[in-house]
View (cartoon, one colour):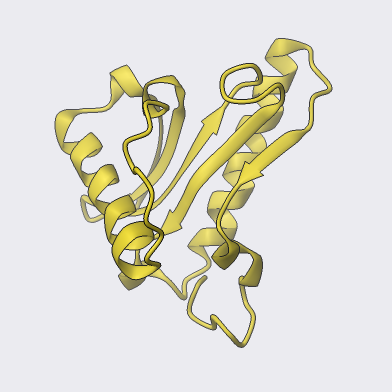
Length: 133
């Protein structure tokens, strides 16, 4: 199990493919969110992802302020289904917070963080979605 923090140009072809496939599998197929997955924002993002036995297990995109919105923002938060139930979503959210704080420190900004997440993230640990984390 290893966490990675990479800008778009640091991703290998295989990592990019695996990240896009995981997002497609979860957001489009599983959650039936029909919107363009390729949104021209990956090139500007910091990609935080977890690999377990060379498989993508979790992912989030982080943007410094001024890229997508005036404030720093995150999105495309996911944990692959077979890796749910082990607290990875909570760890991913904590790592996202660390990265966000570093971005704001670097920018000397007091900007807030904008979360661009679908409704499923609101229900972590609830009885409606017991296996999400």
